[in-house]
Amino acid sequence: MPVENPGIPKVGMPKVTPIPTPGLYAVKRRFSAQAELIDDLTRASETFRELCDDLAACDATLEAIGAMQGRNAEARRAECLEWIASLTKEVKEQLRLATSTGRSGDRNG
Image (cartoon, rainbow, N blue to C red; front, side):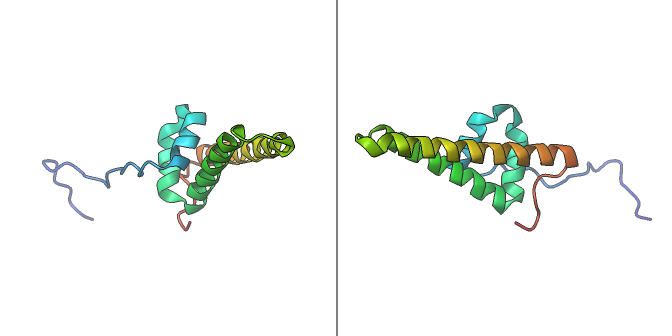
């Protein structure tokens, strides 16, 4: 059994803040109360990072559609809003799962 030295503090791996990306901002803007969990998932899960990036891409597309004119603009706007709602629901589910299981995402992805 290893002997612990009470004079030397235990040092764990420090949490590194993920590099800010449009995806990270898009998710934190919607779920600001869960910012630390979002950071954990971002570090641990490529799948979660991709989900965040997809949401940011939809946000950017919606903004670009706002400048569009013509009969297709409203249909594209509605489609984009559906994607945003679906992706936001998926992020919410990932956050719920991480909270309920005590996990911070998949370690393989």
